[in-house]
Length: 225
Image 1 (cartoon, rainbow, N blue to C red):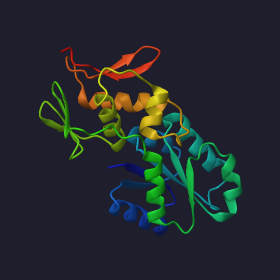
Image 2 (image 1 turned 90 degrees about the vertical axis):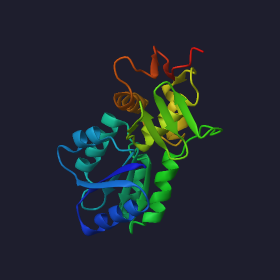
Image 3 (image 1 turned 90 degrees about the horizontal axis):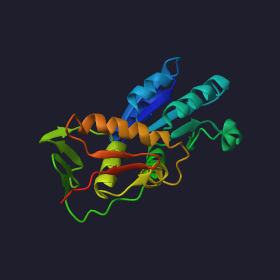
């Protein structure tokens, strides 16, 4: 399931939104703006950041926090905004989308899914298997050497796409398009971050699946047979 982090004031309004999104199937946590927020986001690496930007914290400090998060992680950011600052959002390239008060969980869920939308790998088979790796397309589960591996939504989708096109080289830009969608404005560094985290979960010495193609991008190993 997609993992989200909501940043803002830990008030009842955002807590209610967190609960509503959790009920819709999102992994959702709530935190406050602070000097360590960028490091926290980088370590957690959710699929999307939901950032509150209202009259209380719509100044330069909040914008700087969001900019730092964007530069450090390249994660998509959806802003929760009040109507009086809408005119300033259209030039803020650190914001991928926004929703205005009062925050509607159903509408926000649709916007989240739109950002996460990408071209689906054709699922002609119920599983994709390669050596010790097994991807169950029906249950969206991944196992290595018979042991289940916990992946984030983006990690799973990235692995499924690469494994479903074994041997084919994809540029970072292509992977951004296929996995994150054409509406995503973040840099291609996010691909490197997700590949690194994915490798740490499914690979070990003597067992590798994803190859780096120098100056181009990545590919999933192809069966020699």
